[in-house]
Image (cartoon, rainbow, N blue to C red; front, side, top):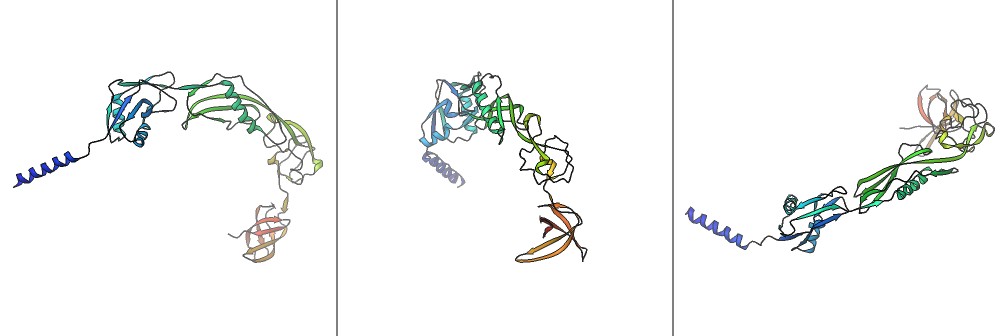
Length: 322
Protein backbone atom coordinates (compact mmCIF):
# COMPACT_ATOMS: atom_id res chain seq x y z
CA UNK A 1 0.00 0.00 0.00
CA UNK A 2 2.83 2.40 0.92
CA UNK A 3 4.48 1.67 -2.43
CA UNK A 4 1.31 2.58 -4.30
CA UNK A 5 0.99 5.88 -2.36
CA UNK A 6 4.64 6.77 -3.01
CA UNK A 7 4.24 6.10 -6.73
CA UNK A 8 1.14 8.28 -6.77
CA UNK A 9 2.97 11.16 -5.09
CA UNK A 10 5.88 10.89 -7.53
CA UNK A 11 3.47 10.88 -10.43
CA UNK A 12 1.67 13.93 -9.07
CA UNK A 13 4.92 15.82 -8.61
CA UNK A 14 6.07 14.87 -12.09
CA UNK A 15 2.83 16.21 -13.47
CA UNK A 16 3.26 19.47 -11.58
CA UNK A 17 6.75 19.95 -13.00
CA UNK A 18 5.47 19.25 -16.47
CA UNK A 19 2.69 21.82 -16.09
CA UNK A 20 4.89 24.51 -14.41
CA UNK A 21 5.56 27.64 -16.48
CA UNK A 22 9.08 27.66 -17.90
CA UNK A 23 11.47 30.14 -16.23
CA UNK A 24 11.83 33.43 -18.11
CA UNK A 25 15.18 34.09 -19.71
CA UNK A 26 16.94 37.40 -20.20
CA UNK A 27 19.28 37.48 -23.17
CA UNK A 28 22.49 39.35 -22.34
CA UNK A 29 24.66 40.53 -25.23
CA UNK A 30 27.90 42.09 -24.02
CA UNK A 31 29.26 45.22 -25.63
CA UNK A 32 32.90 45.03 -26.73
CA UNK A 33 33.74 48.14 -24.74
CA UNK A 34 32.04 50.85 -22.69
CA UNK A 35 33.14 54.34 -21.62
CA UNK A 36 31.08 55.33 -18.56
CA UNK A 37 30.71 58.82 -17.18
CA UNK A 38 29.10 58.07 -13.82
CA UNK A 39 30.55 56.56 -10.66
CA UNK A 40 28.99 53.08 -11.07
CA UNK A 41 29.02 50.51 -13.87
CA UNK A 42 25.41 49.52 -14.53
CA UNK A 43 24.36 46.35 -16.34
CA UNK A 44 22.75 48.44 -19.07
CA UNK A 45 26.06 50.26 -19.63
CA UNK A 46 27.92 47.09 -20.59
CA UNK A 47 25.26 44.87 -22.18
CA UNK A 48 22.22 44.88 -24.46
CA UNK A 49 19.28 43.14 -22.74
CA UNK A 50 16.30 41.47 -24.41
CA UNK A 51 13.72 38.71 -23.92
CA UNK A 52 11.62 40.33 -21.16
CA UNK A 53 9.09 43.11 -20.81
CA UNK A 54 10.35 46.66 -21.34
CA UNK A 55 9.74 47.56 -17.67
CA UNK A 56 11.69 44.55 -16.42
CA UNK A 57 14.55 45.21 -18.85
CA UNK A 58 14.72 48.82 -17.65
CA UNK A 59 14.87 47.59 -14.07
CA UNK A 60 17.68 45.11 -14.81
CA UNK A 61 19.63 47.72 -16.77
CA UNK A 62 19.98 49.75 -13.57
CA UNK A 63 21.65 46.90 -11.66
CA UNK A 64 24.96 48.10 -10.17
CA UNK A 65 27.86 45.88 -11.20
CA UNK A 66 31.04 47.60 -9.95
CA UNK A 67 32.69 50.97 -9.50
CA UNK A 68 33.87 52.76 -12.61
CA UNK A 69 37.70 52.51 -12.81
CA UNK A 70 39.93 55.54 -12.30
CA UNK A 71 40.61 57.68 -15.39
CA UNK A 72 43.24 55.99 -17.55
CA UNK A 73 42.58 52.52 -16.07
CA UNK A 74 40.73 49.76 -17.95
CA UNK A 75 38.52 47.19 -16.21
CA UNK A 76 37.57 43.90 -17.90
CA UNK A 77 34.26 42.28 -16.94
CA UNK A 78 33.61 38.70 -18.13
CA UNK A 79 30.26 37.03 -18.76
CA UNK A 80 30.91 34.81 -15.73
CA UNK A 81 31.42 37.83 -13.46
CA UNK A 82 28.21 39.43 -14.69
CA UNK A 83 26.26 36.19 -14.20
CA UNK A 84 27.57 35.90 -10.63
CA UNK A 85 26.66 39.53 -9.93
CA UNK A 86 23.13 38.99 -11.24
CA UNK A 87 22.67 35.90 -9.08
CA UNK A 88 24.02 37.73 -6.04
CA UNK A 89 21.56 40.55 -6.62
CA UNK A 90 18.66 38.08 -6.62
CA UNK A 91 17.77 38.27 -10.33
CA UNK A 92 15.03 35.64 -10.65
CA UNK A 93 15.26 35.09 -14.42
CA UNK A 94 17.80 32.78 -15.98
CA UNK A 95 20.42 34.54 -18.09
CA UNK A 96 21.59 33.54 -21.55
CA UNK A 97 24.89 35.23 -22.46
CA UNK A 98 26.07 35.65 -26.03
CA UNK A 99 29.24 33.77 -26.87
CA UNK A 100 30.91 36.68 -28.62
CA UNK A 101 32.11 38.86 -27.10
CA UNK A 102 32.53 37.07 -23.78
CA UNK A 103 33.92 40.11 -21.95
CA UNK A 104 33.57 43.90 -21.98
CA UNK A 105 36.35 46.45 -21.51
CA UNK A 106 35.27 49.36 -19.30
CA UNK A 107 36.94 52.76 -19.06
CA UNK A 108 35.93 56.02 -17.42
CA UNK A 109 34.48 58.70 -19.67
CA UNK A 110 35.99 61.94 -18.43
CA UNK A 111 36.06 65.64 -19.17
CA UNK A 112 38.27 68.52 -18.06
CA UNK A 113 37.28 71.46 -15.89
CA UNK A 114 39.44 74.33 -17.11
CA UNK A 115 41.60 76.07 -14.54
CA UNK A 116 40.22 79.47 -15.52
CA UNK A 117 36.67 78.25 -14.84
CA UNK A 118 37.76 77.03 -11.39
CA UNK A 119 39.24 80.44 -10.56
CA UNK A 120 36.09 82.23 -11.74
CA UNK A 121 33.86 79.93 -9.68
CA UNK A 122 35.93 80.52 -6.55
CA UNK A 123 35.97 84.28 -7.21
CA UNK A 124 32.18 84.46 -7.52
CA UNK A 125 31.74 82.42 -4.33
CA UNK A 126 34.18 84.60 -2.38
CA UNK A 127 32.64 87.78 -3.74
CA UNK A 128 29.30 86.83 -2.22
CA UNK A 129 30.84 85.77 1.09
CA UNK A 130 33.09 88.82 1.52
CA UNK A 131 30.47 91.44 0.69
CA UNK A 132 29.69 93.78 3.60
CA UNK A 133 27.37 96.79 3.63
CA UNK A 134 29.38 99.97 3.20
CA UNK A 135 32.63 98.16 2.38
CA UNK A 136 34.69 98.52 -0.77
CA UNK A 137 35.84 94.98 -1.60
CA UNK A 138 38.43 94.04 -4.22
CA UNK A 139 39.47 90.44 -4.88
CA UNK A 140 42.78 89.53 -6.54
CA UNK A 141 42.71 86.14 -8.29
CA UNK A 142 45.43 83.49 -7.93
CA UNK A 143 47.43 82.02 -10.80
CA UNK A 144 45.35 79.73 -13.00
CA UNK A 145 45.76 76.09 -11.85
CA UNK A 146 45.85 73.10 -14.15
CA UNK A 147 42.51 71.66 -15.20
CA UNK A 148 40.74 68.97 -13.15
CA UNK A 149 39.75 65.63 -14.69
CA UNK A 150 36.24 64.59 -13.67
CA UNK A 151 33.61 62.06 -14.83
CA UNK A 152 31.76 63.06 -17.98
CA UNK A 153 28.45 63.32 -16.15
CA UNK A 154 26.46 65.83 -14.14
CA UNK A 155 28.98 67.76 -12.02
CA UNK A 156 28.06 69.95 -9.04
CA UNK A 157 30.60 72.60 -8.07
CA UNK A 158 31.07 73.62 -4.43
CA UNK A 159 33.37 76.04 -2.61
CA UNK A 160 34.25 76.59 1.03
CA UNK A 161 36.24 79.02 3.19
CA UNK A 162 35.29 77.54 6.58
CA UNK A 163 37.26 78.90 9.51
CA UNK A 164 39.06 81.63 7.57
CA UNK A 165 38.75 85.39 7.94
CA UNK A 166 37.41 86.91 4.72
CA UNK A 167 40.12 89.53 4.41
CA UNK A 168 43.77 89.39 3.44
CA UNK A 169 44.97 86.11 1.94
CA UNK A 170 41.92 83.82 1.87
CA UNK A 171 42.17 80.10 0.90
CA UNK A 172 39.15 78.79 -0.99
CA UNK A 173 38.57 75.07 -1.57
CA UNK A 174 36.83 74.45 -4.91
CA UNK A 175 35.35 70.95 -5.27
CA UNK A 176 33.65 68.93 -8.01
CA UNK A 177 30.94 66.45 -6.93
CA UNK A 178 29.27 63.70 -8.94
CA UNK A 179 26.52 61.36 -7.74
CA UNK A 180 26.84 62.61 -4.15
CA UNK A 181 30.61 62.01 -4.01
CA UNK A 182 33.53 64.41 -4.26
CA UNK A 183 35.55 63.54 -7.37
CA UNK A 184 38.11 66.37 -7.49
CA UNK A 185 39.19 69.48 -5.60
CA UNK A 186 41.75 72.27 -5.71
CA UNK A 187 42.84 74.87 -3.15
CA UNK A 188 43.04 78.45 -4.46
CA UNK A 189 44.34 81.48 -2.54
CA UNK A 190 42.72 84.85 -3.23
CA UNK A 191 43.77 88.20 -1.78
CA UNK A 192 40.77 90.12 -0.47
CA UNK A 193 41.24 93.85 0.04
CA UNK A 194 38.30 95.41 1.85
CA UNK A 195 38.07 98.92 3.24
CA UNK A 196 35.27 100.60 5.10
CA UNK A 197 34.58 103.34 7.60
CA UNK A 198 34.70 102.23 11.24
CA UNK A 199 34.47 103.93 14.64
CA UNK A 200 37.34 104.78 17.01
CA UNK A 201 37.33 106.17 20.52
CA UNK A 202 37.94 109.93 20.41
CA UNK A 203 39.23 109.76 24.01
CA UNK A 204 39.90 107.16 26.67
CA UNK A 205 36.68 105.46 27.77
CA UNK A 206 36.12 103.82 31.14
CA UNK A 207 33.57 101.09 32.05
CA UNK A 208 30.20 102.58 32.93
CA UNK A 209 30.54 105.49 30.51
CA UNK A 210 27.44 106.03 28.34
CA UNK A 211 28.63 106.91 24.85
CA UNK A 212 27.79 110.21 23.20
CA UNK A 213 28.65 111.39 19.71
CA UNK A 214 31.60 113.43 21.01
CA UNK A 215 33.21 110.25 22.41
CA UNK A 216 33.53 108.81 18.88
CA UNK A 217 35.45 109.46 15.67
CA UNK A 218 35.48 107.73 12.28
CA UNK A 219 38.36 106.47 10.14
CA UNK A 220 38.99 104.20 7.16
CA UNK A 221 39.86 100.64 8.17
CA UNK A 222 41.59 97.89 6.19
CA UNK A 223 39.51 94.89 7.31
CA UNK A 224 42.46 92.50 7.10
CA UNK A 225 44.20 94.52 9.83
CA UNK A 226 41.36 95.06 12.31
CA UNK A 227 39.21 92.77 14.51
CA UNK A 228 36.18 91.24 12.83
CA UNK A 229 33.74 92.65 15.41
CA UNK A 230 34.50 96.38 14.98
CA UNK A 231 31.47 98.69 14.92
CA UNK A 232 31.05 100.62 11.68
CA UNK A 233 28.50 103.36 12.49
CA UNK A 234 28.24 105.98 15.23
CA UNK A 235 24.47 105.46 15.36
CA UNK A 236 24.98 101.89 16.55
CA UNK A 237 27.03 103.11 19.55
CA UNK A 238 25.50 106.33 20.84
CA UNK A 239 23.65 105.63 24.09
CA UNK A 240 25.40 102.31 24.79
CA UNK A 241 27.37 101.62 27.95
CA UNK A 242 31.12 100.89 27.92
CA UNK A 243 31.92 97.61 29.71
CA UNK A 244 35.69 97.40 29.02
CA UNK A 245 38.36 100.12 29.05
CA UNK A 246 38.99 101.56 25.58
CA UNK A 247 42.07 103.68 24.85
CA UNK A 248 41.89 106.81 22.71
CA UNK A 249 42.19 105.85 19.04
CA UNK A 250 41.21 102.19 19.56
CA UNK A 251 38.49 100.68 17.42
CA UNK A 252 35.14 100.21 19.16
CA UNK A 253 34.27 96.50 19.24
CA UNK A 254 30.88 94.91 19.90
CA UNK A 255 32.21 93.18 23.02
CA UNK A 256 33.30 96.53 24.51
CA UNK A 257 29.77 97.93 24.83
CA UNK A 258 26.37 96.88 26.12
CA UNK A 259 22.90 98.27 26.55
CA UNK A 260 22.71 101.03 29.18
CA UNK A 261 21.64 100.01 32.67
CA UNK A 262 17.94 100.48 33.34
CA UNK A 263 18.16 99.23 36.92
CA UNK A 264 20.98 99.87 39.38
CA UNK A 265 21.95 97.56 42.22
CA UNK A 266 20.30 98.54 45.54
CA UNK A 267 17.70 100.83 43.94
CA UNK A 268 13.99 100.53 44.51
CA UNK A 269 12.09 99.46 41.40
CA UNK A 270 8.52 98.63 40.44
CA UNK A 271 7.80 94.91 40.09
CA UNK A 272 4.96 93.95 37.73
CA UNK A 273 3.42 90.48 38.15
CA UNK A 274 0.95 89.20 35.57
CA UNK A 275 -1.20 86.05 35.74
CA UNK A 276 -3.64 85.86 32.86
CA UNK A 277 -5.50 89.17 32.76
CA UNK A 278 -4.66 90.00 36.39
CA UNK A 279 -1.79 92.42 37.04
CA UNK A 280 -0.27 93.42 40.38
CA UNK A 281 2.50 95.91 41.19
CA UNK A 282 4.78 96.29 44.18
CA UNK A 283 7.98 98.10 45.19
CA UNK A 284 11.01 95.82 45.48
CA UNK A 285 14.75 96.28 45.86
CA UNK A 286 17.13 95.33 43.03
CA UNK A 287 19.90 93.03 44.25
CA UNK A 288 21.67 93.29 40.86
CA UNK A 289 22.08 95.88 38.14
CA UNK A 290 20.56 95.12 34.74
CA UNK A 291 19.97 96.38 31.22
CA UNK A 292 16.79 95.92 29.22
CA UNK A 293 16.04 92.20 28.85
CA UNK A 294 18.39 91.07 31.64
CA UNK A 295 17.03 88.75 34.34
CA UNK A 296 18.04 89.97 37.80
CA UNK A 297 17.30 89.14 41.44
CA UNK A 298 14.95 91.45 43.34
CA UNK A 299 13.77 91.31 46.98
CA UNK A 300 10.39 92.04 48.54
CA UNK A 301 11.29 94.50 51.29
CA UNK A 302 8.45 93.35 53.57
CA UNK A 303 8.83 89.57 53.36
CA UNK A 304 12.58 89.66 52.52
CA UNK A 305 11.78 87.03 49.87
CA UNK A 306 13.90 87.05 46.72
CA UNK A 307 12.68 86.28 43.20
CA UNK A 308 13.77 86.62 39.59
CA UNK A 309 12.54 89.44 37.37
CA UNK A 310 13.22 90.66 33.84
CA UNK A 311 14.18 94.31 33.25
CA UNK A 312 11.59 95.89 30.94
CA UNK A 313 12.26 99.62 31.48
CA UNK A 314 13.86 102.27 33.65
CA UNK A 315 13.40 101.07 37.28
CA UNK A 316 10.74 98.66 36.00
CA UNK A 317 10.91 94.86 36.13
CA UNK A 318 8.53 91.99 35.41
CA UNK A 319 8.30 88.88 37.57
CA UNK A 320 9.55 85.70 35.91
CA UNK A 321 6.86 83.15 36.70
CA UNK A 322 7.97 79.57 36.03
